[in-house]
Image (cartoon, rainbow, N blue to C red; front, top):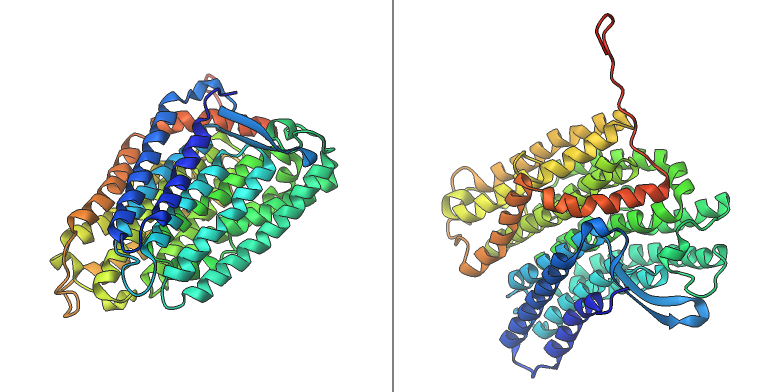
Length: 509
């Protein structure tokens, strides 16, 4: 138990910042932006302080804090982080100031409130930190549902022409998943016998639950996480939401919020319902492989650049789920690292694409051409982010995708071989898109393109740097992740398959 509330302060910093932003006098829009950026950077600094003090070899949850919240139902305010949670909190802390800086002019036009927009970004950061840090199942559910509110308003109030439709679709899908999860939370309380601290993860781990009940509870949680992920076939809300959200909102939606789904599978589904997880694995593996190929194929046919990036994420999340349910250390370590790398890669793609869309006034790929001639820095950063998305060796996604495929192959070779086809498909949709938008002679509409401004350079430079550094040296992150992955698989009762070595006849063993 931590004597100092590191995680509570981490979650409180952006929340207090949001209140300060909203309390500023009317007309102080620039000050609101500056306060939001400063608060997000302070949150990042606090996250770095936590990461420095984190001991990967210690095991269990660190910086833990536990207070009784609703004692009548055994609900506690309990937070703590292992290596997996810490990595995802760090992802949130890095992307939020990047998004605040990228969104500098997103709410300037029309009658939209600049203060409200930046306050919503900070509130969203608090909610995502809370869901990654929660070690009480009911508290996890509260943050899981609370995340919907700021994102709904970010899409519905500050998005594109069809923002209302996209926001409502996002909300309805998420609420349906959340409703089933609430039923499963109540069922878990009953099945575990209730009592004090009924929802604490440490108490629930190893609790004996009837096999049939365990399957129903697993399905309730898994469906909610599959919708959030998004996983085929409950992914259809994502292209609308991501394409209609402002670019910074799309980054936080796809880069951070969607990770809550795959994180929930690791944090709750596997350790709480190990038998049901093994029972459902064959079907989930099939759905994951279908999602990998389907997402890539549909991305190839997209004419809207934002929808294309959204569909690539459906394919990538299929790979992440595949790694999680391969039930191997390589697969799950790769899946967790993939969550981190996908967040940075997708952020770069959405933000650079948003810069081009803002200059051209259109999201249609066919309306661009020759961007690299007039704005080489924009075209170059888009190419690097795209190459990272197709897992080019030397860039961040390669190591994570390789680990997922190797970890899957040791247990499900057919699934791994089929999923490997996504690499070829990714090359098609990334390189074709770059060719259509950036190569060739500049069109009349793109001749006046300005290259990266100083502010935009500060937005993309950290993302490109992280993509390159993690591509060459992912070891520090994997050192943090691996102990948590090992602990998760231990709770599930899964071990890595024993390698089979074939020795030729007549040779010495």
